[in-house]
Image (tube, rainbow, N blue to C red; front, side):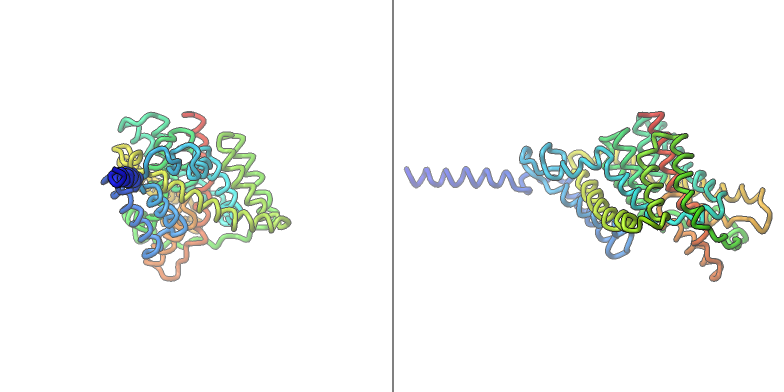
Length: 386
């Protein structure tokens, strides 16, 4: 009897142990998400597509899709778990403003200050946001969901996370993954659109070298930028306030240690946390839905529309500019907020047609304008839809 009782005891506990393993709770959905996570890691390491983003996100997808027995407080959606505490910064929109602080501290707005009309290109590229918003509405998404999805077209992951945390928390994982995925694929998505919309003559336009910007102008810009944008769109204050504050730390010349911290250790820590937790939020049980597939399709459309808007705006603007002041339409794509990747795309495509025509310094103008533009657009969406 004792022997039988021992075997039963061992059997019961072995059965209980097996029920707690991932294998007992594994589904085809988890396998699909793990493959996606591995693809992200492969693209980051082998192709060097945004490795600072795709490695944490890809690994986070693996972490988030290891099945577990409910109630153990290990999942990102389980209250009291470590991952849930880390995810708090995403849910409550804490991480994105800190990212913007670092972006501001590392951004040089000289190209934009020297040629202010380039900010119009950054504004025109936000067409992707409102275009995707309209399409999402037509497909049956609610206005709040459509607004959160549309922000993908700004090519700004932190802004997408910030807005979706307010308007559509349940779609945040799909929106964030879509935004960061297409940011990494900017060198693939944008060039065909740019080439299709421009003529060979337009691609060869040489722009005047930007003028030298004084230190005083660089200091005044973040202060004036904060007052101008946030007095009009106060809802953009968490992002725009931190962006311009970080830039003032950089340009003031007296807070170098703070600027170095913001653009170095701080932004690196927050990037790790935001990437890992956003990736982990893609649990197959909550992520694999028809809405997620629709969001990915809309994300691609928004990037294409944004590139179209930026390039076509430059072509229209050139009609009214003197020959010596014309702008190369190839920098129109840089109006999206993927800094500095979209500006690099302008440079790469431009050099394909003229090995001596360097567009990077010009493209940085609309590129940093796109950062401001996407935050303003997010503020507008938040004001109307929250």
